[in-house]
Picture 1 (cartoon, one colour):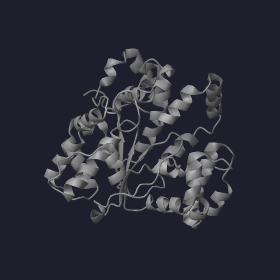
Picture 2 (cartoon, one colour):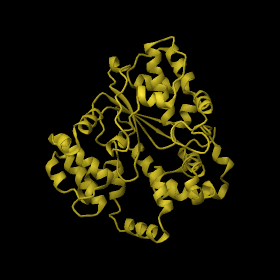
Picture 3 (cartoon, rainbow, N blue to C red):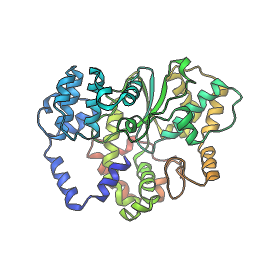
Length: 369
């Protein structure tokens, strides 16, 4: 994620080398096991005081219903992932309100409902496009005559604005969702990105829409979003090729989690490229997956109101990026194959090698429009 990349880029070289050396001495199976829920490997790796072993111990303890033991084993400064697992234990034990406050406990419970929908994504893979579509589809179902687009602040404040992990780490407030889809068995449409260190969806109930993008365009898009469009980070890299390896290391960890969910009946996996190439067909698949009524007119209205050109026009009218403050707009370039403007054959081979370290083949992705 963006914070992971910023921390990597700003850490002194000696610190980065020390971290890499420490990772090399971890049990070789534990990192992938945390991402793909390999319970046998997690059980074997639990029991020491390394961070990954603590995560493995907490996950296996929660799976076994040993909630009190999970809490007892938490360190004083657990970090986001372990803190979340501890809060799951507190929630199950009924002590979360006492520990974190009634409002937090209520939000935590609402964000673990079985009728929740989570848009779970590798960053820069159509997260907000999917959120706009589902929101606009809900609007069109409720009012077939709706034609006015909504802004991003409206989506956040009036419809479906919860980023689950940000709420759990108290970086964003919990937002009461719209009830437009409640009649169809959907209490909330939330979002959450993958993590590089642990599967963040292992304890997430409800249906999940998982999105990813081809890794070459991912690097280009994330470079612009986290570095080039942010003056405070602009000196960290001069070109997307400068960050191929660290960005694809993070990408690969996210993709391993996503790939492990293929075939899960509660999960719909889609690539950004598939959405772009045939949005009518692919978004109809999402509607069917969520068991919403399929109304063709509502699909067409929602597609039009959620199109990148519509959202970009709203950004241009306001004169600022819709999600966070950037130099330029959030809707920068949604094309497939934009990497060709930045990478040569040597760069592509570097990308291929960075993915191969994690057992991922670049040729499995659609990299050209």
